[in-house]
Amino acid sequence: RSLLIIAIFIGIIYIWGKLSAKEQYYRWQVKLSPRNAETHYNYGYFLKRLDNQKTDAEHEFQQAIKLRPGYMWAYYALY
Image (tube, rainbow, N blue to C red):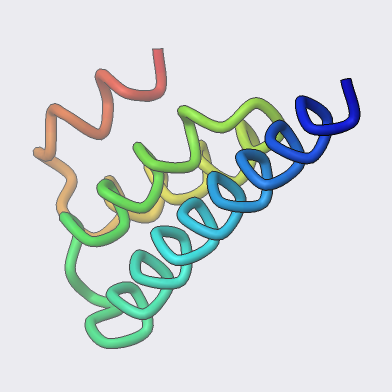
C-alpha cells in the first residue's frame, strides 16, 4: 500500500514538473516576442486547458486580438 502511495506521489511530481516546464516555455515565448499574436494565442490555449487558469487564458486571447484584430482563432478560443 505504501509503495502505491509513493508511486502516485512520484507521478504527480513528474506531471507537475512537465507542466511547469511547458508554462515556462510559453511565458518565455511571450517575453521574447510580446508583439506576436500567435505567441499570446498559444500561451492562452495552453492556459485554457488548465482548470484554474481560464481568466489568464482569456487575457492572452484578448492580447492576441489586440495585436491582430482579424485573428479568428483567438476569437474562437474566447467562446
